[in-house]
Length: 352
Image (cartoon, rainbow, N blue to C red):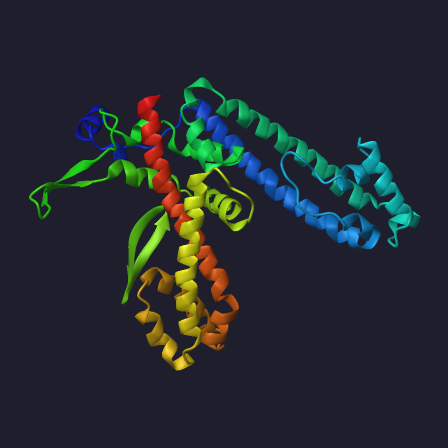
């Protein structure tokens, strides 16, 4: 039966379950562990900050953010771990003059346990990142590095994307071109047979950016499908590269994405102003008259939420419309970035 099934589906790769190579599967499982560690760090730090409001509010003067490489010095200080002499002296001086309870009674055992937990989780996350760095530095992935560098992906983004599309040859045919299949008895206007872009569609799916039509009763639209994990990291990448305003001189690719984002956001904000100017009774018809249907689909949920909450749709749009459209514009940039990444990977794969 297995041999017969294989013979029937020689040219149908979608008929088989996707299996990662053992090395890639191990990296993927390690990435899932990293996600759990990152979630635990956020939970424990938030609990620690809540206690610090009462015990040592001066210790919260610095940013609450943390990165994989650097941990806020307040946590090793509370946990009693090794710390730079200058940083320890600064915190000891703050603690002496603190208005919190820790100046008289010392840190509570609960806060100390939270600080120790944060330090341990940070060390675990740092070890995972170093393993990812050695995984990405393997010779068989050398051809991918210049493409990833051009996009400015972080170590974690590189790892999850590589785990999703490796081996890249699965998206290409024997000639190294994008995998396509001909649709039987279907021809275009010029008489040429229509083909389905199987390789590109599958790549978009593993990147979390596959678009499928959706309909329910009188409503029709499209939904985004594929890997949720990869889609989340695409949004984080866009938010870092586009949302944060820092210099990107010399990176034409990122600059082009930035221009696309500003263009989409400008058009969508103009449509939002037109909708806000309408009365609540006119909004139902006004949303349908927007030329850009994607903008309408981004704003329609807000109007439906306002109606369900028995609030003014116009006021709801004015309060939350810009935030929703910024998210929509960032998602559009991620969609374009996936297309560009696929093309650049095909070129690099041929030249490797």
